[in-house]
Length: 454
Image 1: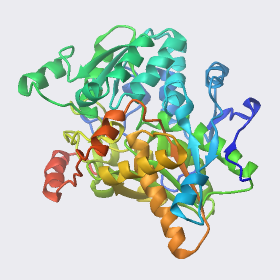
Image 2: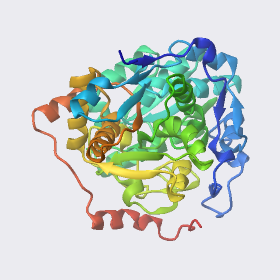
Image 3: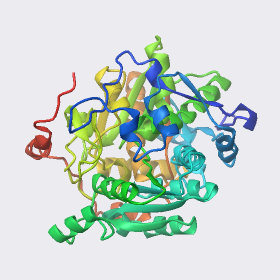
């Protein structure tokens, strides 16, 4: 009988995070102060982040120790299982072996607590009493609510309005863990009130919600801002996923030929892929695939440019693939993939051709998710379904070529609170949306006049 699940003992949990900045062939270009055009220093970030996280943001050390207090919380569910999708393989009649890292087993149901718990710890250690954050589909808001409850911090979450209305049970999870959750744009910030005056029915975006959370953080005592994706320290914290996966693949004497993850801001993809990208940089032959929606095609069709991380233009200018910070994505159900920009780290790795970007339609992604549910049993998050669509394509390609290959993907979260999207798909109510080129060109006009990356 084939091995279905690979577990690590608690004693085998990684005790350091991996920082890919130590190995990148092209160093990151610095974030810039929009007023001066000069590189941003740690002091410029101090109003919104604690200095211990800023130090991780700018670090180029290869290995960074995971604090014991954080490891203790991780052991509630980590190490997570690596599973073999044999039923999916049989359904596809493919010679490929399909493995997935199951991050849905966390208390919040996704990979997000890997950085939420770490960020809550570092803020607590720095003396912070309260955090403000944004969330799209709600997975990040739930995860940070969990982390703050573990370390006794207050939390306010600005949730993209369309997801707030689509996913009411995610709000309840946040409230159960003690957080306050409001729809964004909200009447609680100056920026939110301005947008609601212009458009009372504004469906919101991650960029808008980030602006509100940052405004909250800088205008409220003992409060800092927390981000669930995009930034370097978030990517760092997530690498525990890939580090565990490497140990688990080695246990069964295998190594992936293809590593796949979905991307919105980049965190679950980076978490799985970065340790394997290190292997690729040092000579391993493998493909690394980052999958996004065609409705928000940041890395497949957006320019690489300096842009703001939020709609109100309050962040430093970041070097990244972007659709422009004013971009308002269509309200597709994969709310966690509706961000205008991409992690600078992931962006640079795409530019260096270490990562292959792809985009998939909403209908193709849901079809893949339903196939996975009916073969493997797990109902995955709509975000994860984009990765599964690529997995199926790779497995069928292996079948056509008559080649055996190992495919590894990140099951970044379950979809048990996303069933309204499945209902719409199964009832034939969902449609695909491909951004017209003129719409993209209009969206990126906002970048005119900004400094240009090299």
